[in-house]
Amino acid sequence: MSGAKSFLKDLDQAVSRGTAESRMRALWHTTDLMITGRYSEDEIWTFGEVIGRLADEIEVAARAQLARRLARFEKAPVNIIHKLAFDDSIDVAGPILQESERLEPYALVANVCTKGQPHMLAISKRETLEEAVTDVLVTRGNSEVVNSVATNNGARFSDFGFLHMIQRAEGDSILAEQLGLREDIPRHLFQQLIAKATDDVRKRLERERPNMVDQIQSTVTDVAGELQSKFGPVSRGHFVAKRVVTTQHREGNLNEKSISLYARSHRLEEVTIGLSLLCSLPSDVIERALHDRNRETLLILAKALDFSWETTMSLLFLGAKDHRITANDLRDLESDFGRLNVETSRSVLEFYQSRKSIGDTYASPKRQAAVVQ
Image 1 (cartoon, helix red, strand yellow):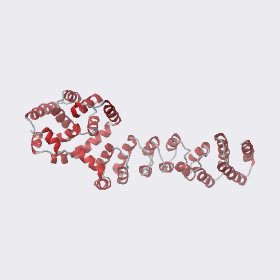
Image 2 (cartoon, helix red, strand yellow):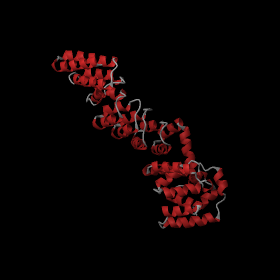
Image 3 (cartoon, one colour):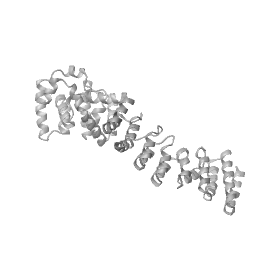
Image 4 (cartoon, helix red, strand yellow):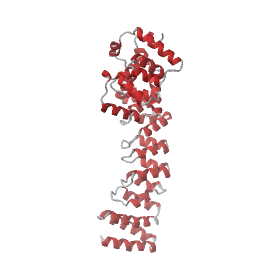
């Protein structure tokens, strides 16, 4: 090891007084020595310092060759890796940005924020990408970068990242389809994507991901016979409740406070009618959301209305079997509710509203008559 240090010291002194040709020979000799040897991290760092000085003196083509050699070297000096990654020439930076495992997420984020689109495109093709990196890629990258990262199966996205791409996909059918085909897209964001997609994209996604689309259709329009058997014909009490709640809504007094009071009083009819009016959705859809074992739809509706967790919790208890929810389930539901975004949830609600006519066709004649009273 001491021999290697002595050699590097002598080489470092020769760098300043050597010719361009001798520096080039020294660069490849040093690189070969580092790659084939077994050195400590400190010694590798020293190699990087010497290689970095030599790299400053060589042409772009030679630096690009150096980058290709070091990109897959698992012990490459971090100092020279960073230097090459931030090189203005994409021929030099590209191999490092795309392949080197020595680049930390913070370095990738800094690169996205300071370099150009070609650098971002190289980063978008890495084998794996963390959410912190994809967040900046989808906000700063052009359409080529965003489409590239959307097709990267090793990339992970936050809800923010997905939402930003969905917004950009409104004018980009290719991106919309790529997002819809990702297995990791959350269902509520897939719903929003479908709501904004063109008919052609929607049909392709329905063909490619029938299970996901069927879940959405079920959530929005599936009013199974069990609901009709559970609630039976519309009662006199329903007409009274509808008249009271509709008047309350018309006068501007139907709000979170009144919905919460109805829920805590177990006034199911009033809650159903009230949420139906506030969400502009058929009562059958609200009934399904209240009683479905998958509580996601109810959480989305409550978040879209900007309800507090306390009010949402009372709605969950109202629709739960025997009005009971375990402590663990309640904690999970609160966590899910906290992760939802108001604007995203409102976009999903708009999707539900766009499908409500389908739900109306399933409603019983008696229930339809009640709605227009």
